Length: 441
Image (cartoon, rainbow, N blue to C red; front, side, top):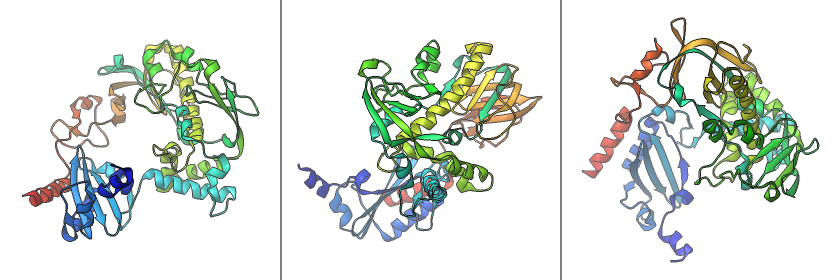
């Protein structure tokens, strides 16, 4: 069967439809109720003829934690709506207008970033400012985007720990987006490994996935520095065979392909500082700070082709944190390193590694010489003088008796009473399921 004929006979939802992810439960129910009232329910998911014979067709499915609603409106409008049936908070991370069109945090963030960057740097309203300022890179540059830094010392889990300290970087990724950035309009390509230099300070190694910035970091160095610590070492690299952009640490220097880039005359500094100053009073500013960088290397690399910027920002952030990791290892030995999550570090020791200034580029010392329990990554509680001063419950969402986990707890031992459950859908999700069951009856 030819490709054209397949496209006529079948609906290819990923290609044909507009995707509306994580609709809040109540709005999803409204969309579904509207479909029941006005549309025709179809049995086939992909046979196009069954869908287009009606003005409005729909189909409901459940997959794992999510509900899916597929809809068709004449003449040629296909949509997919999804909603998390078990954790509506995850749905509420999305902005939804009255027509039920959604924008993810990342989409809102990049739009706000573009608008302010365009304004501050004097680009015309019709311009594509980030492309003009930094160039758009091919998808192959994604191999150089480092893995986000996560590490947990499993030997120290599930026990009460003493003399625990912790620190975190303020607005870690936004601060790493400040300063000079590479410009793909000004690059040189070489066969073999070539080091960056003052004129071309950014080096991207497209065979191995390494990255270097003159006078700062070269990820080649991490092999020698951290190779003796296997768990930490593996957390630094994208080595999953299924990853399209899996890094290859075995590439000989002579077989490398190096792209050197000169810096752009533009920076993101003023834009990031603008949103940083508004972060406590403006929700959109917080979105830009937290969600814009991910748009630079989207899985579907069709817009904002800025993998070279994402690579530099994450590489700088990892480099800053790894310097702190080295300090902890040097002072207390490798086993004193407890937990690292992107911008935060937990370690055993009565000393501070940061200051008490919550500003860009600063490592803020959150607590020193405390008791703590760490169960899993991002699942821990810290206690000082009998009071819980920091608490993260990771994927756990209820206590053993089914009650929701509050924002604060009284003792660190309460961690042991928490668990993850998918057994109880939200009330609205249960109502939607009953609606679907009644249609099947």
